[in-house]
Image (cartoon, rainbow over all chains, first blue to last red; front, side, top):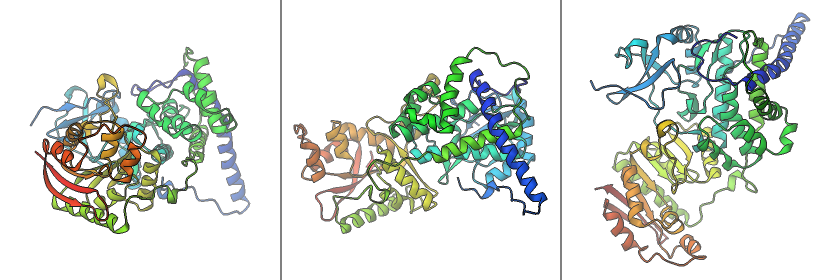
Length: 58
Length: 458
């Protein structure tokens, strides 16, 4: 894994490994959502506007 | 020009550091960080984040760097009026700080950048809202690279928030012990077993903690990345939804009636409000601490004069309610914080200089001590002269309310114990405080036996 010299935090081996496992699983959902959006658009559904976070009030 | 002084808390990140010169705070950016800084500024990310109130603005200045050899640029960030720490925040404040961090990460990813740290100490409340104060927290995102700050985010935000929500809100104080956030094995063992049925807490706390133990010595090999952009977004969204679902409400109470003011008639209450407001104006105080501020009723009066007001209280529920009002009313110069006056935040961290103590963050122009002296003098046995010394260290001006023994609140405190406080009278109080202050004004609070004093430091 290439690290930039400025990554000063220790990401932790266990945290790194488990993060990748969890994220890959969750990423499938995100990918599916993206594809589903494309399919819907192909069949004439209005494309969902991407969340514009700028209006988000945290 | 005086010698620049590097801030003692600013040593971890080789990208740059904070220093002060002639009373102004600057941030030196090192050459090693120049590409990441350029991307932050050129990609439009800086502008978007500042516009959204999620990052404090800065200007590039023509100042000599504090360490010439490594220097790339010097910037002057906007001044934050009061630096607070996560162990002083109420539940919603820590939750909003967490959500702000994730919101920043999502926006950064859209422009091919990523947060390289997710420290709660990098978030401050600016104009009433959680904002990032560390301009050097961004790095250029390389697809495939996992989130290097994942562990830190879980320790600084998710672990304490889940403990506060599922176990006890007072567990936020673990952040005072663990400077880099709550260890995940500790959080996992303290959380109730039912949190294993919450997907977010199961994965990001329990399984995460187990993995840390199991793989602690495992070397991360080149090419062990493989976390594409969808996976990164999935991870951030999962953390976000887990945190949004966490909630806290004090047991058996409704927010609306959590605090009813008891010992006053309406007219006495209004009278007290008006006096406080007038005295803030008379003394031209622009920075005020309300010590024992409860839900912020008087802090709000002070803040309405334009003074930047920090409202401290020991009760997490009162501070929570105060913060919710700040958000609802979009108040910009009022900061509610949790503080135990009998044991205020100490100096913490490396060499005891990374996090400032409560006292080191003062003094301010004025402090308010309304209906608080009996808690210090009677519940905590602090001699009146020592209480005067404490307030003398806080501010030049002091507005203090004396609550006599005849008051029902004090009678309640004395009901279960011996009255060993012969000095605790109006006269004894004035005598003790006169050692440190000039008493400028005294007003009896209407319809009560209490009195309000305006004092100035000797």
